[in-house]
Amino acid sequence: MATLGGTIAYEILLGAAREHAVVPVSYEDDTHPYTDLVVGRVDAVLLDNIIAQRLQKKVPGFVTQPDSVATGHYVGLLAPANTALRDRINELLLAMMRDGSLERILRNWSIWNDDQPELHQRLLAGGTVAVTVGDATNNVVAMSRLDAARRYLPSLLQASVVTLVLSCLSMGLAVAVGVLIAIGRVYGSRVVRGAMIGYVELIRGTPILLQLFVLYYGLAAAIRLPAFVAALLGLALNYAAYESEIYRAALEAISTGQLEAARTLGLSERQVLTLVRAPQAFRLALAPMTNDFVAMLKDSSLVSVLTVLELTKQTQIFATNLGSWVIPGTMCAALYLLMSLPLSALARRLERRWKAPTL
Picture 1 (cartoon, rainbow, N blue to C red):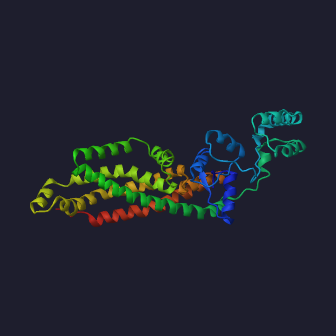
Picture 2 (cartoon, one colour):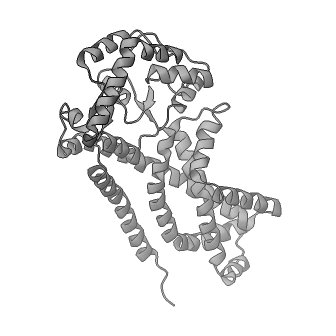
Picture 3 (cartoon, rainbow, N blue to C red):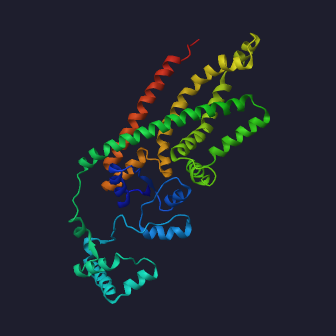
């Protein structure tokens, strides 16, 4: 079920997920939840009914259920120094409620519903619509930041697993595609080389965020890729272009003398590639390939726009609910370091082990 991240609706869905088979899907805007609902990527959307009414004009093909899940309230908050302004706002809004002008405005904009009369009566009885920040915070029981960190740590660890799995799978596919492109650049015909160059320049010349949007939203009318699959393909196809340049340079760095000697010994071009050229090229490409993997771990945060709940997306939700980025950001950075540092250490160990002997 889809909704906006960091909203009361998202908290409602999280509560429902603990008791029912509900999977909350968080979006950055209020349009794509409905477009994904129409194409069948999600089963339902939980948002304010006024948002649904407006979006039905732009995104036809869905219906709004008449029963409300919850009733939300909008409250005006002003700084403590603006007490006079607060009182004036209350005076004007309450007067509009009493003479019916506010109801006429809401009806004119199709906002008025059956919940409004009771709400108006309660506001008129209480005499308050806008409050100062101090008035509002007195009614809030704040969760300590340490308790919040303990509460969200399991979610961050789970999101870290998503980030790591996505990065590993994407890098594996990027390496495979990059090798094929590099081989095509080195051994292919003029047409093949031209096609490979065109692909590399297209990918390197356009933002990865745009590529992700095209894969997930742009192709939705023809191919409805799941969010994780679209994220995997987007990262892999993007990094394949950069990987191919690393492998091409490594292949061309092998001396011509070695290649000619291998051919003189009767090896075929395939044997020259697999037995002589590729192993040495792999050693040359290992360091930059490791750097790209670490970079992909960080770039995987971009797939949050496709509703993939990876580490950065979960951290954003944590920070929104906590009202601060200090603890969530520190925890997120620590988890990224825990994932990237072992990889860098492994790469350095492999480099030392495979280092060519000095002649």
